Image (cartoon, rainbow, N blue to C red; front, side, top):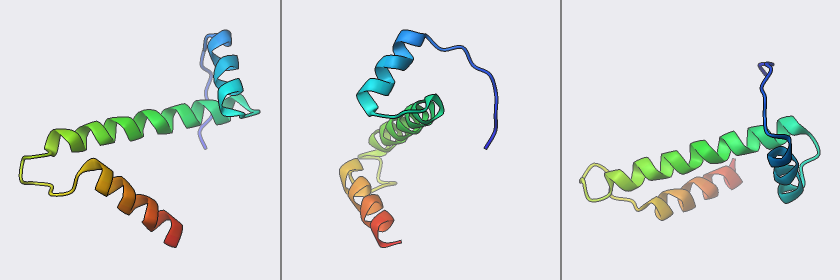
Length: 72
C-alpha cells in the first residue's frame, strides 16, 4: 500500500468516520475512494445502455458482480 500525506477537512473526516463506523482515517479514505470509483463505473455503464455494446442493465451487472464475489 502506498503512503502519502493529504490534507482533509477534519470535520468532514470525523463525520465520515461516524457515519461509516470506521476507526482509522485510512479506512475511511479508502472506502470513499472505492465508492467514488464504483459510482463512476456505474455511470459509464449507464451511458452505454441502449448503445448495443452492452445488453445488461447496471443493476444486472451489479447483481452478477456481487454473486461472483460471494462465490470466490
